[in-house]
Every structure is written in C-alpha cells, then in structure tokens.
Length: 381
Image (cartoon, rainbow, N blue to C red; front, side, top):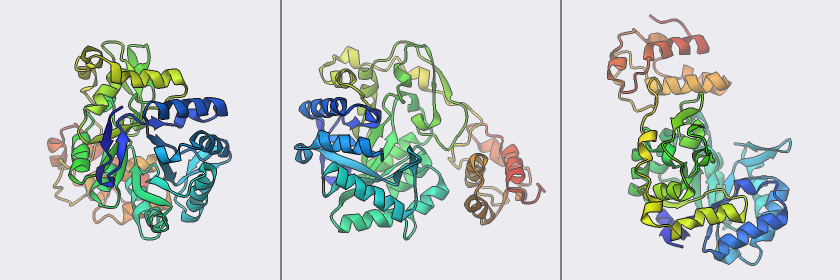
C-alpha cells in the first residue's frame, strides 16, 4: 500500500481506500470479513454514508479494536426516511443522525465529517448559509466530535465553489475514465491542489458501468460528475474490456487525488482492486481507452460562461441551472431564486451573440423560452 497526504489535514491516507456503499444489507460476517481484510492490506480510509441502523451496527462491530488504525468519514445530512436513504438539510435532524452514527460506531470523534451530496446552487447556498449544515459541522469540530470538514458532490461547478471557499478540508467528487473529458474537471482538480484540499475520488468504476462486459455502456450523469446536465445516461463505446486495475491507474494518476474509494461488497472484489499494487505497467496502461471517453454531447450547458457578456445582462448559466432544477421539482425556493435574478429570461432580445460564443452549441434562445414557460414570468421581447 502507498499513502498520500489528504490535503491540509496532514493525514496520511491509503491511496486506495474503501467505499462501503455495497456493504448495505450484507450479513454482519460478510461486512466484518471485508473490513478486516481491507485493514490487513493497509487500507486506512473508509467512507460511510448509510444511515440504516443495521449497517451502522455492522460497521461498529467491524471496526471494534481497529479504530486507532483507520480514518473514518461520516456524512452530515445523510438520513433515513421510510426505511430508505434520504438527505436532509435540517440541522436538528442531521445532528440526530450524526450522533447516532457516533454511538453505533462506538467512537467519540469522526475524522472527516462530509457535507452530504450537494449539487445545485440553491442547495449549496442552503448548506453553506448561517445556521446551515456547515455551521453545524463547525460546532462538532469545536466539540471534538469531528476533526475535519468535507464536501461531496457530483457537479463540477458547485464542487469548485466548495474547493475555493476555504470552508472545507476534503472534497469527494467522481473521478473515472468516463469523466476524462468532463468540462470543468481540470479546473476543479487544479483548485483542490491550489487550495490544498484533499481530493477523494469516488466512483472510480462509474458505479460498475466501466467494468461491464458489454461494449456499449451507459453512464449516469452523477457517476461522471455532471449533475448540472440532467437527462438520459451518456452512451459510450468501449474499445476493449476495462479492468479494475486500469480504472484505478487512471484515477491515481490524476492531479491532486489523495485517495480513491472503490465499492467492494466481498473479498474477491477487494482483491481485484488491490491487484493494482502488483500489476505490471502493461496491465495498468489505459491510454488506448481514453479516445472512447473524449467526447461529450453538444447542446448541453456546462456553465463555463463563455457565452457572456449578455447585452441584456442575463446570467445565462444561472438561469439555465435554475431551469434544469425546476424541471425536476419546481419549488418555491427555486422560483424565488429565479425572480431574484437581476435580469430574467424574458429580457432576452434573441441577438444570438451567446450562441455564437458557446463552444457546446447550446441553443440559448430556446433555453430562455423554456425558462419563461416554466417560471411563467413574461415573454421574450
């Protein structure tokens, strides 16, 4: 095992850690077997977000006697509702589930307390505002219940804000072959390095999509790190079979990555990941795979702001972001955020200057028309 610094935390973390997502609903003996084997192989970074009591109890049993050897993360805002995983921004609810985590894990403190699963601007503002989850995490720091603060997200633009904010020590973000050409990825990785934020690469196998036998694979937006572009999964044509070793080789060569957390539900999958350390250079080679993941579809806004300036002073990226969120769930908060914009979609004069500048061929005029239709505020001039 090799170890790397986790940004400004100063912690030495195993370059390959372990995500525990696939240990949910596994028998306790299976959970204990995977965790104990991981520790024996030198893994010391473990990410946990499930709130189900049985899962947490199993983890408590697995780490009993090993707590001083490992670095454990918990996710603030990860809760359970009606027996299923859910997310909350209510500080009181989030505190309840975090204290339950400590109790069931049998520990007094968590090494990294992650602000859980934040992708859209309105949600980011809620998490970071006074009295929100960031303030709660800081309180737990003062009380000695958390050492460092992290942030997890699947949107390069939002995660970039977190990395540059000086509010977090660790960022969790999808890094994998399928996100090779993701717009904004390079800027995000550079920001983590510049601000000494520890980067935890999640979803190194893109939720298992990269390892499927089929040549044609479909990867969900959140597995790539482009939640700002909701829609159908992205279709890729693999040139060859892709191995766990190649996936991890790509991730661990990306600038700024401190550790990656593949999900392994049994010792065999764990062994397949750890085979990276004994692999030859030929087995690690991934360059021939990259061309299959170099193209992202045009027509999708990535909020790069190349379209600006707008003569009507419309914040085009923010307007489209609010539109895409409202298509999923038009809330009073989203409507208020839209109405608070200095210039709205209805102010568009259809000059098409933005479309001439856009490198992704986004039909901005159509997006503005859609925003007017969704938010119901006026019509185009």
